[in-house]
Length: 340
Ligand code: DAH
Image (cartoon, rainbow, N blue to C red; front, side, top):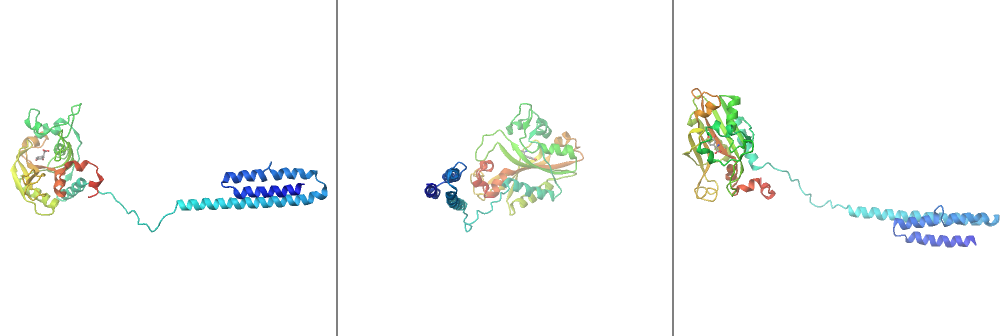
């Protein structure tokens, strides 16, 4: 009897639909009952064989079954959608009451900071800031600074030589040479930059470090002028009284040449590893420009003279922040860098 078979069919399909645990199971149940070749479609074909008076009742029954199954199917589908939404909401749940991670802005490297402070200071006194290449000629790095190839001073600076005869500049002094040639006298310039020495690395030596070169060329420049600028420089950097002393120092490009030392800011002069127990730190070699150096850059030493200095920027940063290991500066270690 078709009608009772329809009732059975409906009951078992409803069961399957309600019990479906996944979208695939549900779809399989739907296809089996309601699909084009499903059980209901099959039954509807058989209706043609029925007598007309039976056909109406069976048709009604068929439609009722179809309706019931479709409703059940949609209900189960809605449940799945609801579950999926709930799962997604659970996964994406945010606790808006948690503290925010906070803004963590970067900061300038302490060397960059000190460099721009010194640049500002000198610019305010009429100096220009010059740049020079890190790969230099032998002539600019040595010869033009009154250091000919047989000069013992070449051994003072262990040089990285390149295969083509160029070198990594051992100091920022070659920028003096470039400045004099390019701008001529009168000249007030500084040149901060990276320099290289072929040295054994330890707590106070690096193969790569920073200097700031300064030079003034004018008429009748004296040691008093030089000292004025050096003292202004130190007052600007340390923003407190720094005890200094001047010793004779030898550099082929200045005469007379000096070593300007400052009393160690880490130990106050009592002696510590940074000042090698001496209480003083060599900070600022300087002097009056050797006439040969002017002449080699096309400046007449009868008419012009000047002073020059070479500030160890790296050492200065170490003094300022009481850093006792030079290697920290280029370590890239965030624990170190975050302190500035
Ligand atoms: N260029 C020298 C060095 O690196 C430092 C220096 C000394 C620079 C005396 C100067 C100066 O301008 O007058 O060892």
